[in-house]
Length: 465
Image 1: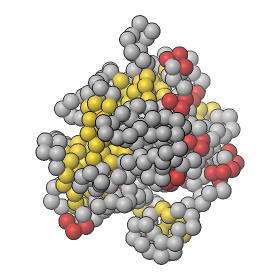
Image 2: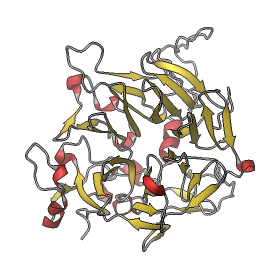
Image 3: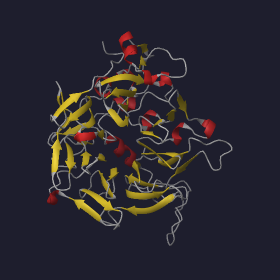
Image 4: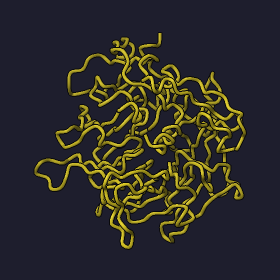
């Protein structure tokens, strides 16, 4: 595996997880009663089942790995490192606890607000929470038609007809890829019938625009899937855009995707660079005027940063990184757009800080520690209805920036204390300043009026008594 891919995977709190466990056990009657009417499936299903996961099911090459964190700042540090890359503390590390089922299952990667519900991808499938009741009302697994129950790094999105798509899940080591669609009655897998194979689907991010689902993830490039494709439809059912196939995309690590607010045919991509190079296997460099093509054996440089992608043309129409602009980092992980047309962008170290690109002027504004910005990295970014910008990063706290001041919010899980916030789409802002965040202990609701954290109650897993 490439070093860049390994580094990307090591960014996440609960990365080294699981392949399949024992056969699922039947849920209790109380769990079955918890399922709401909106979860009805138009096909005959067995009673709700939960997937038990066990330490022995973890692949050996993952099970033997140990993650260490810096005692000073909490950043995850690669094994054998002599100093922390964030705070430069020297050797003051501790071994993180093993990321086995009893720790990792409550952790969710992507959140989708679907009416009065929150749909959250995780290592047990999709957990559906009632915002009003503050509890998980049902869990969707492979028994219901999902391509996999291991959705810890899955993207989730919704189209114009309220159909829901979920992709990926897992890491390259676990070989968990795929795409499934909920049409309101049943789950429909996308398979070889439309030319799709499991590895065609990227993990991490999904968005819907221009009658297509777009996915991205580490080493996957940008993938377009046309859900309404038939044999009579012109064009291909899917296409992968990647740096080695004549496509105008600078990097295959597409870590975040958003749709432009004004033009639904434009995407903005956060890309994580891969400077180590490698062999391209006889492929040619994308046809850029004045640049010689790559030949077999040449070193590849896959620069990361912020890219503007034209869906109509299937090509990059703008690219910014630290080499050609004031873009704060080439290791992009998160982005969001506010109502003023500013594309907020952040990522991993090395980074100058948190910044935004003004679409109108083409100019960057970067907030650094000299400007009072408390963070240099961002794993997730969302914007609320008042244009406040919210950031998650390696651990807690969550930060809110109102244009003048930075406010810290430290998630407190009742009975367990501070709870670290994972990356990905782990934060969703609701109305009135309330927000929902995924933490290492489970889902939390922050009530702005009372300035308090309230925990969602999860359904039990089979290994829980």
